[in-house]
Image (tube, rainbow, N blue to C red; front, side):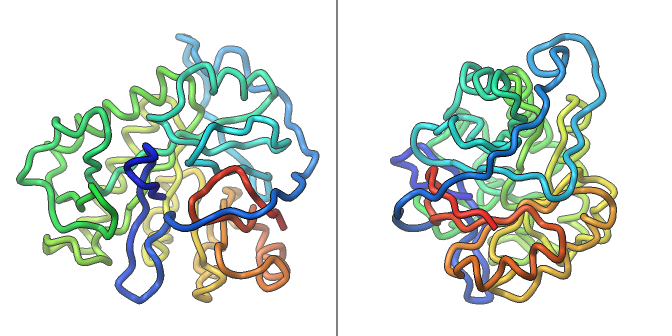
Length: 285
């Protein structure tokens, strides 16, 4: 997802097929009520603990909240939150854990962001074309050795703040005009590196979009995060996740729930409608 730099947000992938850039957008409406589902509290030894525990594996159909802009509204009664890793400190994660919620750390893994604290650490040679949002440029994901320590540092941040998982955004640069001759094989190699970095830190990790390589990458990822698969008639490509016992966290921005909820309920997705700015408002299926 991508929020405007001025708002201290993050970014999501643009598409050359005419769809809007993933995860960015426009203004809010009135909030809808959230489903009253609360999970058991996360194990005390997981977030913030030095003890090694089995990493979290969410299950298909679990309700979630995705908020990347504004102060996080911690009152939405769902088992899973996905929030910006840079913009939220450990106290926010601890508050959500105290309410029995699991928390996913949003970070951009496929594009450089000028407004992040680590922006100067990225070599200029790895910065490609803009991805459609101010202050953001695609990364040359072929440079695994140079990007590995930078992404590892971001995941270390997520772990230090107590997050349970990471949502690495923009994992489909090969399908966009990045300024680099990226191939599907380059993307698979990079995405697997990203998954390995997360798992090495005890964090679950989600495959963000990249529907064209779901079957190759399914063994490496613990869940999927998808935008607008219903609008673009692609949701069936994500069904292998549910078949493998892994959830699909899915949002639509333009379709009304009546237009997509029947299908995604049948597929077993965790779906809702959101504003493109990804504020607190949600309308769940």
